[in-house]
Amino acid sequence: MDSRYVIIADDLTGANDTGIQFLKAGYSSSVVLDSGALRDLGAGEAAVLDTESRNIPEREAAAVLEKALPHLAPLKGKGIFFKKVDSTLRGNIRAETAVLRNGLEFSLTVFAPSYPGNRRTVVNGVLLLDGVPVAETEMARDPRKPALTSSLAECLQGRDAAGVRTVSLDEIRGGMVPVILESSGFRGTFCFDGETEEDLGLIAGGVLASVPAEEVLWVGSAGLAGALVSAPRPVLLVVASLSPGSALQARHVIDRGLAAPVHADIGGLLTDGPAEAERLAREAAALLRRGRNVLLASSLEERQVEAGRNADAGERISAVLADAVSRVLAACGTGGVFVTGGEAAIHVVRALGGRGTSLVGEVEAGIPLVRLLGGPLEGLPLITKAGGFGGPETMERCIAVLSSCRGKKNSKNEVTAGS
Image (cartoon, rainbow, N blue to C red; front, side, top):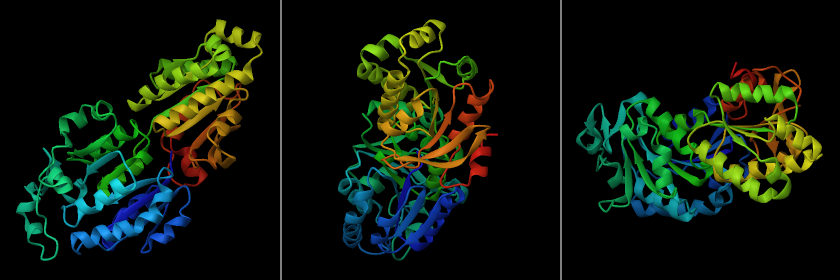
């Protein structure tokens, strides 16, 4: 989902540098000096809180962050938290991160300070400036806050960094990020290597595919911020339609490898809805965490189509599929949801706690792109389609649009993003 972004920076220059990354992605972005201003942060907006705490003593910096916690806490679970740090490891990174991690009860911390566009890279857990460990450069001679270590783990946890997991370039480029996070139970502190912007994209994409972004404390420079806000996210497609057209569109994306199918059992949908919803959600979430688009289908096979028709159970089927969608989105992130068929769209909106939709644009004739209004997932991009609408490639186009939705862009930009 595209939610609120809450960025905590330790100086104004870095606050502006990071805020620009969100502005470029279509978010309404601002820098505030008073944490109380965060109460007005809306969906699709990014606010950077500048604490001006980089060059003060560590205890004072921690106190500044603790003072802001009452204003930050109401946004936990509703906003994505990003702790902006200096890309050369100067400042009170350890103390400030600890206050946010412990005070807001984040179970997962992602630390990736590399900024390849400005020659800051991380290899084997060591931050390099122009290829030299940063603690061996002029940054170590900063008169106010020098870089005291080149080690990410030591910077974040001190010399006792046994609980920190360093994720190597080979692991990142090998697509192992979701596997590593899953093996940890999606808990702990992870320090990531990164030499290129593509590496940062793999980090952001791997984490986003594994857990909802709101459950992570993201710690990094503007490089990670740019990767986070622009990372494509897998899409969830829900096909409750009994129409031949929707079945054709679904088979098209499955046959082309654009989505992995998770087939519902009509009997299970009708006789034990909660159990079937849980099964569907479990299988779908596992695929989404690996970065796959997922297609939840109730009726692609002819015998299931007939069973659904004969049972006259369209509304019950839609309700169970909507329950599955709600469970999936509670477990992992997605770029958006596509829904086609019967009563499915209204059931999905209600299952997600929405009070309606905000109209954004039209993907094709009669196929709107909207955003969810209300509920914990407010701002979530949705595409709703009548079963008989569209041609064979319609669902493919909808996947492209949803995977590239960002911020509060205007309808023209969002709808043409996947063209």
